[in-house]
Length: 163
Image (cartoon, rainbow, N blue to C red; front, side, top):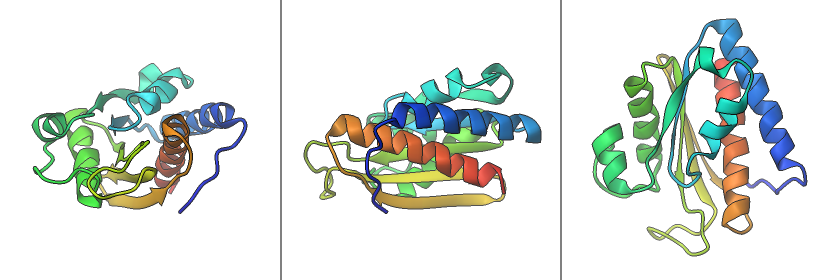
């Protein structure tokens, strides 16, 4: 899936984070996140959302492979994979005793990594019912990729918890 950068992406990130907050509160859910290329942008958006102290457990910024492995239980190997994203989502959900967790890994750019082009992003959402995972190809500079990833991760989390 390819997404174009919207002019008001920060506003949309805040709006979707508020929707996630409302959905989590209505369902009595606790949420967490694990981030690689977004370096805390998802946690920041969730933490700014209404009543976050009641439903947001926290997040792990696992930028390096050794943190992914040592903290989140990711099996050593390539980290720009669906398997890694899924393991990150399960690992942070377990670590934080959350009901749902979103995880992102990928290549922010400007160059490729692990043979994957810049803009390749994998987003996984884990709940007790299973894991949703999708690979995306975003365009733009690293900042644009981070913003698009943050928005898409929040939308993915919203979609899973609203089911």
